Length: 329
Image 1 (cartoon, rainbow, N blue to C red):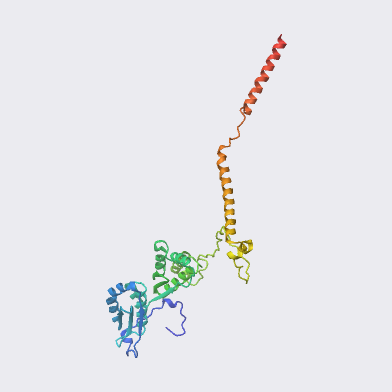
Image 2: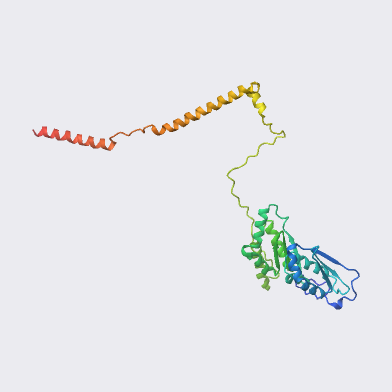
């Protein structure tokens, strides 16, 4: 390929694999990286560490496990024939420490594979909101996460306050965008997945290679839906730099009522009088409530309006009958 030649699609360019013959001299200095792992991962790492060591030994990398300190270390040797593989090995042990299975984590050693650890803990302040958005990213029974993996060809693990991903570099960009949009509440992950699906279908059509895809891609507007207003609204009081007035003490109350200057016996008599007054009032109310059941109810009149109407009609008929008799005589 000429130096001045225009590159249309840099992602599609094949990368020649790095071989042992390309490294003519050994590395001048030793490089090493150490990664801490949590206590609950110790059992799993102990079981599979022999397989991890074998995978690294093919590239001339040595791996050590320190159970007391809780760390994994990778370092270069004189036999290391790939200068960049130490960074790949560091990424692999990082992923294993974060809960990724070692079979998936060792895929990072390939040249076309990369990894990305997205910290989502600082994106949302409130705990309940953070949990909801993280669940939105996973979906019901992990369906959203599975769809994301299929469309981006990446392995994704959501755990705690981070999202660990590994796969092709183009797919990692898409995963980061979806995760950030979801956690920042910008775009729902389903809409981003629909856009990815549309792009995947458009890539198959060779006639649309040099055209803009904007008219084919779905456009979504972020609608600010008004939430229900709370029934009880707390009205903020006007700010005053002065502190609230100090509550009155018992002595202040006695001084205000004049009881402070009375003797203890007089105070007791006054309290007893107030108590007896309250008692007599309560007794009067109680007696009134009891006497209510002995008050007879107001009786209704014996004859109702209907009976009065019947009587009136009967008397009218009798009067008419008597008048007829008189006329006949």
